[in-house]
Amino acid sequence: MSSAPILALHWSDWLALFAQYLTLSLMSVGGAITTAPEMHRYLVDQQHWLSDFQFNDSIAIAQAAPGPNILFVALLGWNIGLNAGGLATALLGALITMTGILLPSTTLVCLAARWGHANRDLPAVRAFKQGMGPVVVALLIATGWILASAHPASQWPLWVVTAATVLIVLRSKMHLLWLLGAGAVLGGFGLV
Image (cartoon, rainbow, N blue to C red; front, side, top):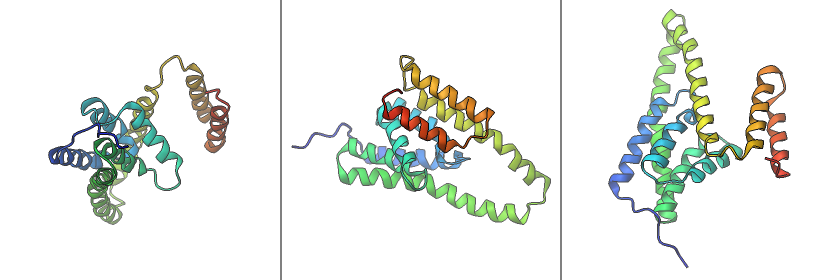
């Protein structure tokens, strides 16, 4: 028994999705995860192609899986395709989002790395590298906020664990993997 597709996407929708990811690629300073808030705005809030849970689950599954963290982009495209019809459209969605996010940034990074290496002693190049740190941190905070906002205040244990983790990271030298493991144990016992 097959179910009808949730979405009816036309070629113009696929082209708009590709164009959106081409643009996001150039904004993905610090990695594609830093553009997750804009992806959420476009895919969930504006187009309604994914639900909050599909969006968050795509990121969570890709981050938990071994391999590059950019896999969440493929999962977002995959889920859009599944919502639009099935396996063939799921593959199309993953291909469109991955090509869109990789093509401009890969090309730009290759060209900029060559130029930056050749001009690494220029004050402007050194200043640019130092100035990008706060931008990346701010984008990661925005990503965390978007992912956390899907959980209501009634899930206060999750918020307490999150706040405690932030404090421990800021005030100690404990390795982050220990904190992730502790979170997994708490989740496994159903405490968060």
